[in-house]
Image (cartoon, rainbow, N blue to C red; front, side, top):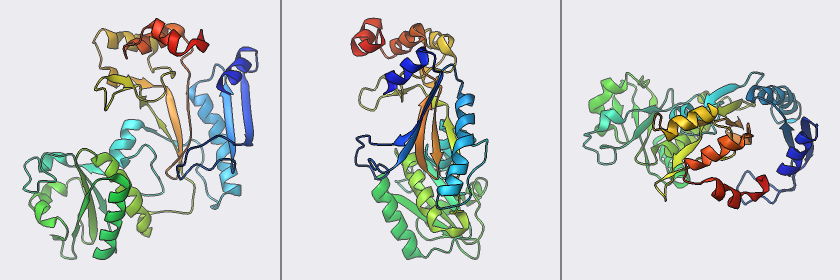
Length: 322
């Protein structure tokens, strides 16, 4: 339907809104349910990102507050969180802002750790104050997290005397003073730890799992919206090892042609180019995604040239655009 909507734009209908049952052929993920929900779809001509945000921030909160399980929803403006900030702070580009836990990168403290799992690795920790979970509960939650993330996670706690104990405590007690500068290490604080190549993904799972298990850190009965913005335009592919598009190749790059030319000349790193695209997240679930489309053929071709695709390649792959 995308091209039909864009035809409406070119014919003079500069706003298109669709509220209808969704019968998309969805895959088997847990948050996909074909035919059982309504969707709001919209196409707006000559619209800025702020224009889109203003419409959705006006429409969605009263719907959720009136018809949802909870009666409280965010009011405009929603928080805007850059993608990199979301990953660094929450370990996820779909943070559940009802949970007040965040992670800290403490890799520098463990470059020569005697514990091999931490030594020289990316190490991220989450401090959970006033935590009443038992050792058995902690171990069960860690096992659940490992199943979800595919990475082993660790823990230690600060006992009632203010001493580090339990879990991997003996391997971190030597840097307690340094940790106390970035973590809250008061008595009865639990610290969960992710380490290794996939520490960011793992710590994101830790935050959501342990946050939901600790009522004093989880304000459950409300809808908390946020925008994830400033997605990277490019990334290094895991398999190719070369520059690739990160998300939607047809998004307008922030900075337009100028920033692409700078990357081509080697004046900036292409990985530092952000796309004019965004996700709407509510309670840790991505509700929708969108973008300001790249409507300038010259800018689009230049964006593809950075990933080694010339104009002829683009014409072959996407002939409908010509």
